Structure formats: structure tokens, C-alpha cells
Amino acid sequence: MRIRLTVGELFRKTKSALESGGVEFARFEAEQLLQSGGIGKTQLITEPNADVSENISAEISEKINRRLSGEPLQYIIGEWEFYGLPFKVGEGVLIPRQDTETLVEVARRFLEKRSSRKTLDLCAGSGCIGISLAKTENADVVCVEKSPNAFVYLNENIKLNNVSVKAVLGDVLDEKTVDGEFDLIVSNPPYLTESDMNELQKEVRAEPKMALYGGADGLDFYRRIVADYVKKLKIGGMIAVEIGLGQENSVSDIFRENGLQPRLEKDLCGVYRVVYSIK
Image (tube, rainbow, N blue to C red; front, side):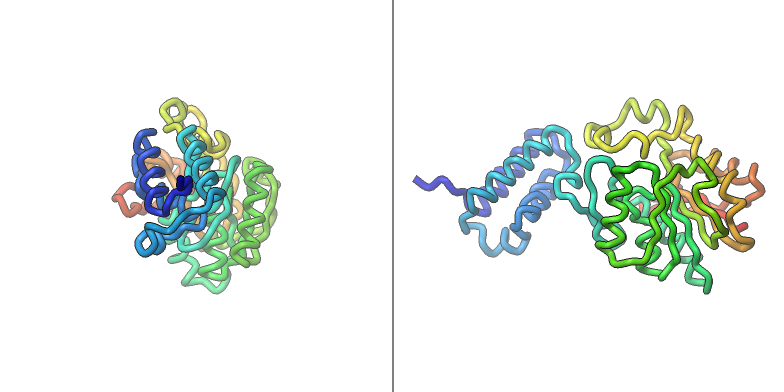
């Protein structure tokens, strides 16, 4: 009696289990889980009848159980792509999202016009923003992150992407954490409100609260970052922050209160995603 599954059978079993568990994009996630076990999309097409080893089958089954328990797919795989680059992720660090690539695009447009590219990435997390700018624009980047868990991933990702980025373990709300002046300051700070936190999807609840919660109105970090760090911005330098849905007016007001003229940038879905200003 054959106890092993074929590649095709394992895929169908994985997809079915995820669908039954309410996973929205079950087919995509099944492909991702199989790839994490060494079974690529090409093999799914060309070798669907090939036997899968018991070890791989057991590994995928264990990952299915983790996913159905609410653990994010990205944590299970241990790595996720952002701006075409690989980033290690896991418990304790915010998962890079495509929305944040809008902030990178705004920052790149600015840096392309400058010879001096000293950049400060606040609330850096995995380092996806700062590392992407160092990789694509040869920016001289300092990344600041408070969480020791996230800081581990930040350093791993600096090595993984082979960039020269300075990682600082510290609190961005303490302006003494970083000295000097910068051409560019970027941040994807915590910006979820108290009501947002109460309505999070199960997967998002697995991500660190300190990387998500921005105070009762979601604006705590914007108030402090803009007020404290505009002083560290060179004349002609730019500050740019990611914002949440519907926060463009409130964050723009914070910019104006600190002597900055805000500009807005939409993401690919047409949502205002970035507020930025030239000093």
C-alpha cells in the first residue's frame, strides 16, 4: 500500500485544507507552502505524479496546521519579498507590505536628484525601506528600531541584501537616539487606532502590537516624529511617512503645524498612502 503522496495530491490536499480553514487565497498560499518545502510551481506542472518524501509531506502538514491556527504565511515561510528584494521575517517583526513600496518610490524620486543621500529610516522593523533605498539608490542609511526581536531581523536583512546600512537599537521617540543631519527621513510608524486594533484579522494580531498601535487616534508617532526630526533635516531635505487609510488630512495638518508644506502620494489602489514635504 502506497503511503506517500504525489506532488499533485499534496497540492490538492494543502489547498483543500486551507479553503476549509477559511484562508482567502488558498491556491496562492498552497503554492507558497509547497515552495517552502522545495516543490516549485514548475514541478507542480511538469511532475504532478512524482512521489513526495514522507519528510516533506510531514513538513507541509505541520505548516498547514500553523497557518490554520492563525500564524501569518510569511512567518511560516520565514522570508518575504519587498521591492524585488528578499527579507527575513518571523515572530516579533512587522511583515513588509506592498503598500509601503509607495514610500520607497517617493523616496527614490527624491534621492535620484541628489548627490548627498544620507537617509534616516525610523521605526525600521525588518529594514525593508532603508535597505531598499541603500540597494537601489546607494543611499547612506541609518535604521532605527526599538524592538530587540525586530532588530535581529533588521541585521539579518542587512547581511542578506549585502548593503552597508547602520542599524541602531533605540527609541525613535527619544530624539537623542540619532545625531546628525539627514537629506532624507522616512518612516512607516505604527498608525492603527484603538478601534482598528479591536478589529484586526487573526493573522495581523500575530504581528507585534508595538509596530501597529499608534495611540487612540493613530497619530501619536506622527506628532513626535515630525516635530522632533524636522530639526535633523537639512535645508532642501525631505521627510516622508506612510499613513493609514483616511489619515491624509490629519497628518498633513501635523506637517503644517511644524512649518512644512505637505504633499500626498497615492498607492496602486488609489489610496493616499504617503505624506511628504521638502524643508
